[in-house]
Length: 155
Image 1: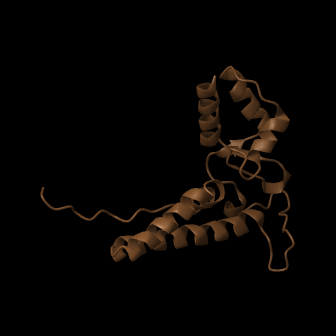
Image 2: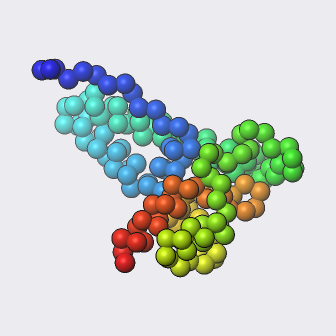
Image 3: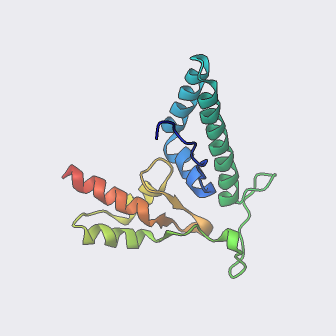
């Protein structure tokens, strides 16, 4: 095949965009810088695609953050009553580990970590992707596995 065939546009689910922008802001900023550089260098089509992708990622991040935090226009958090959770109030698939379960997974892998350390890792920029619906952290299983791999590689 002598010519490159166009590929389908990539789709990033809203929660993935939220995590990308929240946990990897330097990557998103780098994409924007690269897009701007491509436009300046004359490769406007590729540059515009990158800039459009960055715009969509940031928009999805804002929308998902608002939905996750349930912040009203007046700045007060809406707390759903027990048993009235709709589908949108539930955490995304994979976000179901409690801090105690994270500690247990670390122990199975031969690593030590405390509940407090897990809660600190759940905070933005802490290393684990997590959400806090209704007061308790729910941690993403994939981010736990990646953190365990990272720590084992450091040993």
